[in-house]
Image 1: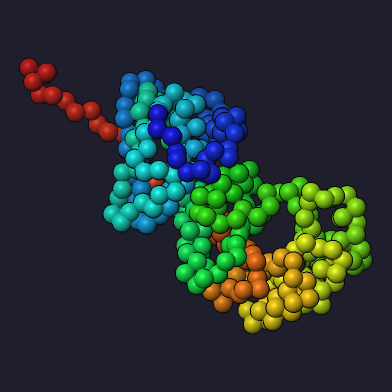
Image 2 (image 1 turned 180 degrees about the vertical axis):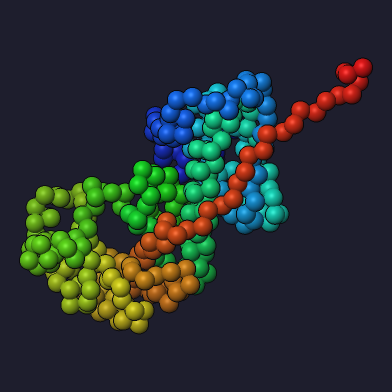
Length: 301
């Protein structure tokens, strides 16, 4: 069985792949697979076809894990992270195994691959926009992920060469407007968070103005998020904060899209996060086609 070669694949523990594959298969086939009677357990071969040119392949560890669970093998023609195309249809992998088992894994495996590849493709495009303009900060995702599917979507960000941002609420302290309002002030919120987070966790504060950013930095925040700033307003605020707090990390977020990303690039902004990396992101069109067995006419005589 061929293995995905992208280094990000090594970040996923094998038991996590197994657990997810079993959960997806159980969701799709909770009891009987009545259609399996039609095809039986004869050995078949199916071709994985990509029908969206210039897509980045992502999600092959999950795809392979699903088919491994049902006793099938996958041989990849293109490695994880490769750009597939430019042809309208590209043979991407070959799956072999018992017919009914291959069809059991088809939909869960395709769902993972289509979603992950769509996210990786968008990430790759966004990173390319930033790189070609000489920006040295980090394009990042958010926690605006599909419930129950976050690990796949965060992994796809890695394949697409952008930052995953924090994994969850436990990964980093982010004090948003509701935290501040409930605490009474930015300073009080940062102080309370620091008392329990210790040295190993960074604290980020969502700020709606340069003044709030200054208060957050002065209170000891590691990162200031300038939220929903217009580009020119962002550039001025980020420059002023960097001059006063040189080690402060500055993140821009809110209202950033693939179309306007270049307007937000600034030497004073370290991170730009975009919810559209996962929300409303197009999927890549894959299909799995079982090949009809070739009959040798001489054997029929």
